[in-house]
Image (cartoon, rainbow, N blue to C red; front, side, top):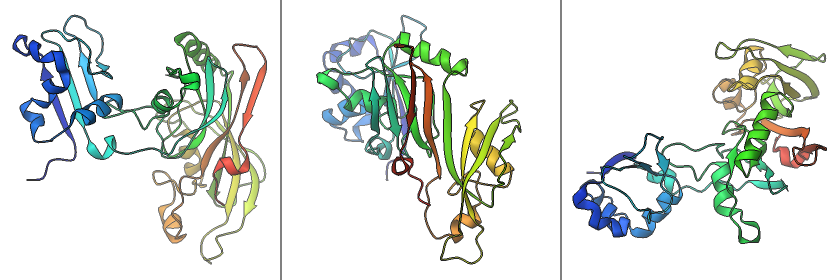
Length: 307
């Protein structure tokens, strides 16, 4: 019988199992539910690094934490959670691009398909964890804190903090609307030449997006029935989930390649498997370290907009 694609295991540490904890790899491999998976020691080590194993301490009420190293000393009644999804655990994301490094924080270009944060099943495909695992200037690992997010399908500029103190400072700047974000997108239809403001609530919360036309593009040359495509620039006053995608869709200008809120008929007829044509292409804020205004803007090639 084939094994399920996803499996969740809960393992309680009993007093009788403590002797096996001298080698947690052996202990995990000996669990009845895991034997059929035929997971090697190296695989377990990788799965822990990729965020699939969680520890809940019996001695405190804190939330479960990812168990990265399988050499931690455990106690009776501690609980391990193993979230096993092999297709995810063996996947490798497209690497991000470093834009700037100021030691206390860094700026990255997140590619489409990379997550901003992980899930309980793994986090190695998320930007922050990729940086922790792969970016080690002077052989010194950098711990990362998330201060804002981008949709998985959206590429663009993201800030990462490298200390709790800096994470608090950057988060405060976002809350105070002192970090200005700009986006660029390709949308179906002839967008008006005059700037537009959309303020339809998103998820029952206030949301404001400002959109202006950059350029009107011709319909794809291989089709006589598809509408024109417009290149637009967007700034936002709020940061609701999928806000830009929702506002443009409701206004009748869905983003090209948007599988959730776009026009699937247009995308299918285009015969081109476009990724979501939305990029966060500029960040501007006063640096918390130097108090100097910093502006980061992507080049046309970095925007990764194909039309």
